[in-house]
Length: 395
Image (cartoon, rainbow, N blue to C red; front, side, top):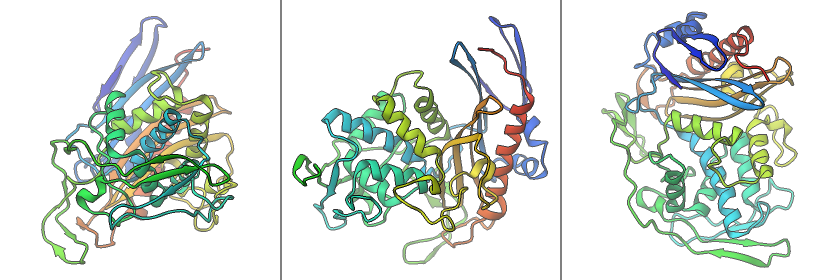
């Protein structure tokens, strides 16, 4: 059941006759920064989704609460799109009968394409879909996303997302900068090889079979921006040619990956576990690739709850499985919290725009002073709320 707005929402589960109340004000009023930001949701492009999760006979029961998640409330999704792309990559490998760790060579067919035949961060020194996904999920690596995007192709991405109930998502751009405009839609030739470097599968360059139209919403942000030539443009930046995914869709995709309750993704249990493990790990927990803990600290992509600190995370009971986005002043986090000691499970997703001067690409964003403190405190307050509330349904 869906519930929206700031008013207290009351319902009774008829089969359990359990009673529950929730209001976003309950959370926002607990902290000065939360109260300040939530009082100006338009300025901060603030959106929050909270999912109660209880279990009966090991079956999850969800109740969703939405704050300011109307489709017209645009935000730049940035790296959130790495979640569906990672899932679809494993699904496509299953369809063509290729292992996740098969060596993958990426070739080129137009000037902006990158050729890739080595990956020095992997044990084998060769690239693979498996290794690309690890880097995407551990540290939000943009080059890895681009190579996986090229393997999938835009038609495969959108056909499958539409079939699975996500028709509004648009993934039409790489994230490593070479290709511009329509060239982003032409994806590279790809070859898979076995460990003896014998070809086991080849895929030609792919051209889109149809146009991919951006959702009809206002995607202009800010009062000014700097273009690729560092020239100031005194007008809002138009994101209509960018990748697009709503917070609701990201939240739903993560929930489906975790609980598999609607059986939308064609993945094996081992593949789901692999994805969830690497969405949960801190960079230091990865044996390959290996990351420097000073540069890639524990909270590097754990904005909710831990985002305002770079100290090592010592709590081994709280596991946060999440995907994040950060670009152009927008910061987002879509997360599942599981505390095995206190028997707590809930989902929390949020986005905030932290750009007080409203100028995009000037290098002056307020991530450290506004976004990260807000998201970290938001996560902690929801966690405290979950500690206090009683489970509605018992196993």
